[in-house]
Length: 320
Image 1 (cartoon, helix red, strand yellow):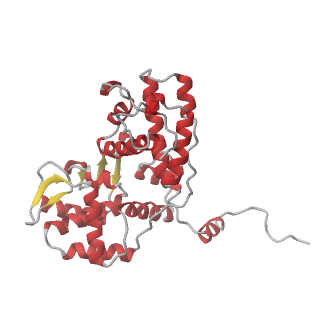
Image 2 (cartoon, rainbow, N blue to C red; image 1 turned 90 degrees about the vertical axis):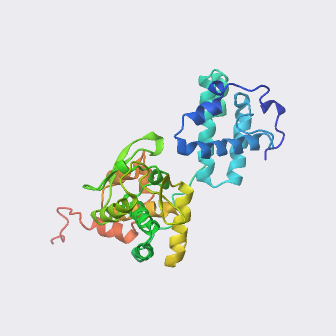
């Protein structure tokens, strides 16, 4: 909560959605991101007005540097750095829309967005899964002979073998998967960018078995299974993926992990195996190799062994 918040930040009259900077920004996002960013903007509006406004009742055009600087300080105290930076990014994007809609003067806009991002440490939260843990998870799926067992096995190998985000996984359609090559067309990547990833050959059969159970009717690749064990061609939600993994982890006696930990394991294993970072970057759907490099787990000993492959001419024992 910010102190001494001016009442003037409250929007005095409703704006049409086509002229409201927050509404315009939210509508520009991929469907899967809209709710998350709406919640982030609501939290920002609440902090700026002591709980009086949400993102649609805040007058974004009235924000000045004193407001955004105070907000940054509040976000640093309340949220993890990565989350706070995402919220600051959303703030900047809304103010950019306010500028485009001619609701804020260029000078006021430039000053309001002139706030630094919060420094994030290079260490990543979460963990990598071991081969033994993944094998245990697959075993409990194989032990479940219902359609849910086949689906969850397919979910596991897609997460493990392609490194997709859970939002990307649940957005896959049946025709996005090519069994002959293991290619998966990702249509719901960040920034609305398409990319193609590939499953290892060992995973293709697992997904194909699920498709045989599912049927070849067009629709979501990974779909719901009702309590009666019948396949329902209704898309899973990202939250459902989390619940399914938690359930299987408990059954397999595997320590708690998140869907993103599969992605972390995927990237780390590829980098540890010596694959070049640009290739891994493309598979991960990162806009920069700097982001991908954070997943590297190579130890100091690995780096020491790497330089031993270098040959420096003329460095034999000195004669004399």
